[in-house]
Image (tube, rainbow, N blue to C red; front, side):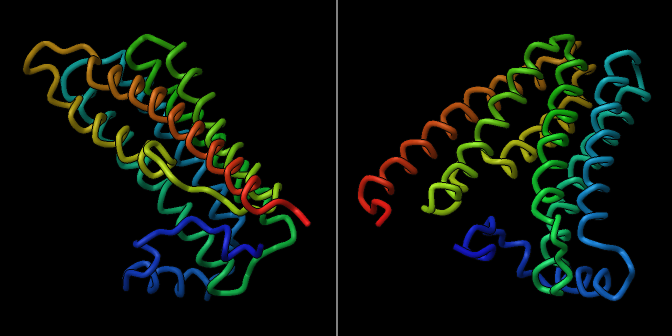
Length: 216
């Protein structure tokens, strides 16, 4: 199967704004790999903002949570544009496969661990990261087994990041009811449980495809 068949289906990829920005990027000297790396640094900033927000109060806390939410979305935008510049603009590199996956795994860990440090439960961050890694591993396992990538949820990467972004924004209002990170705490548990279900669904789906369409 080719890269297009194993590409995550995204509605945003077909929008006019995404097409316009990717065309502009394609005319610059910015490479898809550099965009992928930029996404990882955006995730690092998001994680640091989450961590720092747990140590301050008042406007500073809200500002850091908002910044974390913004940089989570910047990470996703980088994930969108690296592929568009590589494939639509034909600027892929021989090592593009590495830079397409490695920054994603690092980004998941940085964001989820940062959110967990915000609520004072680093173990939740490691657990969420582990299950996030597992969903990606099972997806790539399907590719290696010849049955293609399985992007189903309920807690695929876009779903995880949307949930964490929403939880970060809602957490800004927690001081009004004397909350202390309960929203992100719940969100991390949802990521853990949802990613576990996602990995299981992808694993069973891969095995089912192999059983119904065995290798010649």
